[in-house]
Picture: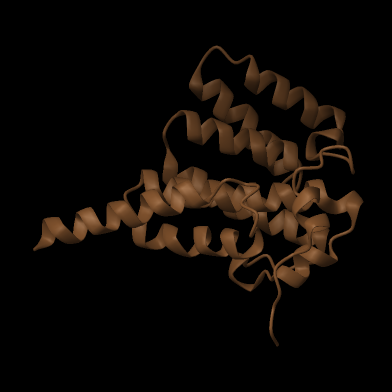
Length: 182
């Protein structure tokens, strides 16, 4: 089947923040919210890790918890751990969108079928995929970063998520690495 470029409506919707609830609009259970607050105010990294771990055990599918875990690992530059959490974020968003959790299976038709109310969740999924690509770049795994970036550009022809510069940088780094090998 021949896929066409998304309509102007779809491209506009990728930037429409008024169309539906954002992940953090879903209030976590009070005990989970308290643990997230405890983690954000923790005096030590071990206290923060303990609170986040407790929150994850209580609410493993809560996107507030998943984002808190991602931020924790990202800011510690624990990129391998953040990569696992980015994949978890896509899996959970995929369930809510009723689309493939495996980003490689996501299609332009999936994007075009997404209703206005679900656009923020689709955007969350796509930002998690962009985060995955960026983490791979930070880890020096440029070849692996190509796939997610190319998929994002396939899904977002208008480049609303601004992935083209990352793809260009990734390709440039690969050429540099190729030159270093010779």
